[in-house]
Amino acid sequence: MTSRTYFTVSFEKGKVVVHTSVSGSVGGVEFDLEGKYPDAPSTSSLARDLGCYFRGEVVDLKVPIDLSRETPFRRKVYLTVMGLERGVTATYGEVARLAGSPGGARAVGQAMAANRYPLFIPCHRVVAGSGELGGFSSGRELKRYLLRLEGLAV
Image (cartoon, rainbow, N blue to C red; front, side, top):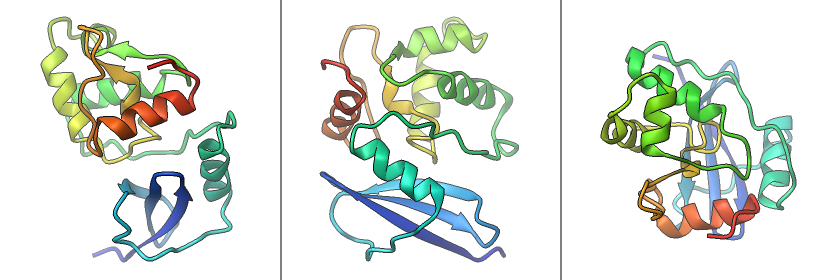
């Protein structure tokens, strides 16, 4: 079993917790809005970039993510969503179409709900076709906050 650790980056709403392996690769990301995790600052470039992101600065949050354990459909969906630039949204249906599965909007929603790498696979940029925000693992208010941080009027 691989030992894991984490670091935290504080922002206005709480902390983002980045779980890492001993080798330093990102193993998952979660938002801690209730203060469950003790502060664990890092001097890594990724931690600095996340701090800049939460200050509203434009940074490249692309990190290598191992998608080998995901289904082929989820890999396509996650790669599609990773291609959504800051300040751009796409509907669940558009992501499904771009991932080669027109009519797969519901399955895209399920993939977004299972996303272990929010911010790096920016599922907050995927919205409902009705114009509603759609779901988000840490709540719609945080989704709205992230989209506003990226310059969108939502």
